[in-house]
View 1: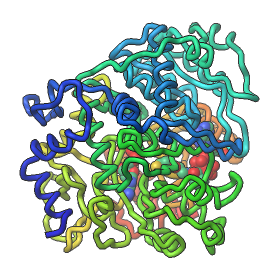
View 2: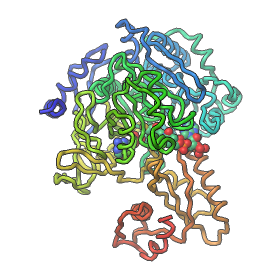
View 3: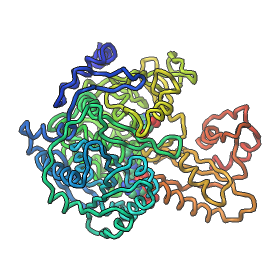
View 4: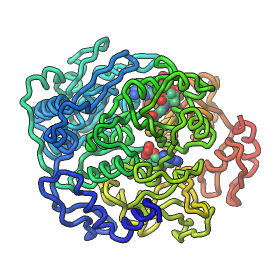
Length: 631
Ligand code: COA
Ligand code: AMP
């Protein structure tokens, strides 16, 4: 039996003991004696009664162990051309002061703090400062528009927002304060304070914030003046953060992460999946606004006592397609973790891998990819070029860490291209048919579900409601968590994840809701009805494509309408939606009950085989659409 197989078996046979053993690698103020609380099944929680502080696990314990001078954080800004290294001692002191500053604003355990920041150290410091106080952070990705920020403010009801004056995109500077002031002015929930990290070259206007009804606090002044704050112990089951993600509806779902289970899962996964330990360096090229950033830029590397790289830049254009390799080489990263779309962008700009060839990277031992399916072509290309294992790992915001991966840290298993290998210990992954019956025949595609309970670190609930959590994930297949993905296992049990079963799409590794885009498009006065679908894109994986039917009597040039709709989606959801394709059509294909046949439309657009459901209201609508859909 392989080490993986034995470990997996142990995790299934006695999950309680398995995770209690793993919990020993975490420092607790009250150690756990019980692993799992099943009393409220199907809602499960981990390590009831135990207490810890997650930030203390990420910082204080490493300093106490004598590693205070080791690098904790390397901030590498390709857009500024600067590098700044924080030792564990220095990072701890910054976090203690930031926690003190938040405490002086009245933030206490359980309060929410929204963090809306670019990729600068203060983003990570603010997250850890919240964790130090037992406050619950909710990081909102900088590419979201004020309306999306306002929706999160209303749902999370924060006391404070921490932000910066701006972010730097390759082609433009993004002023954050107009977005923040608009969001707080329009939100029904009133935020008391906005803490602002001033960056050179951006607006610095407290009036904006004051006029919107909140008080401006300067980040630097407040943190310099603050008394260092001690770590506040919290229950393992207390929330560490809320991270909003897209579902099928326009209303984002606030995934709630617990404290103890997450700390254990982060530590375990660093060692057994990513194979990065104390003193080693991990470079995760994502954004702290996404789950990959939360787990593998911030929490896991620091809890493991490793060095994390916070990279402000893009895979290409800052300044070129060699940027990632420069960072790996310069900082001696053992592992690089990124999204397949970034690899495709690099390949497009450097098809023969010249930058890779000219950059010696002796420390690099593996490349991990997640966020979307790693297509076989890209996988082969990058593995040939880098000559290190390329490891696809499949997971989602809800789970917080990999559901399926080659367990590189534990042992490297033979890989099959297109597959994230096997279920990770702790996850019991099954393929179910539409009625919840298990499909045990190999190579049979179905809904991918995880038998409950899921392991520590996975979502505890949704913010604002266990009922929404249950109806979103647990009701479809009783006894299981429905991942929303479809796929199959082959005859050797390798898992293949093929795509979403709902209206969630993945654009450049960013998870977006076509439903939310449809809501925005439908709000345009010229539109009678619309459908937004995700069509395959060679660079971005998928791109949103809008098909609109005009109200009768409307006379508008298609190009003007396209521009207006693009601007509307940008304004209401944000540039990250990357909504650029619009086609005016005479009608949309529907079932007799009025449901738009989005899946059939997508299959036609992607050149796949398609079946027109027998319930279609008017089959000629599809025929009329063929040319438009096929582009
Ligand atoms: N703040 C403000 N705007 C942002 C932003 C941010 N943090 N991030 C992206 N945007 C904007 C971009 O400027 C762009 O705006 P534009 O339409 O005015 O040009 C738009 O959102 C789309 O950006 P992006 O998705 O980055 O596309 P791109 O064409 O600029 O770059 C890639 C393509 C592949 C290089 C880029 O998408 C990428 O690096 N993807 C990796 C994503 C990733 O790591 N995801 C994490 C999941 S693990
Ligand atoms: P997010 O919550 O933003 O991380 O997006 C999660 C979704 O991205 C999953 O439900 C999948 O649809 C997709 N995804 C993430 N990683 C992979 C992967 N390795 N292979 C296939 N799909 C993936």
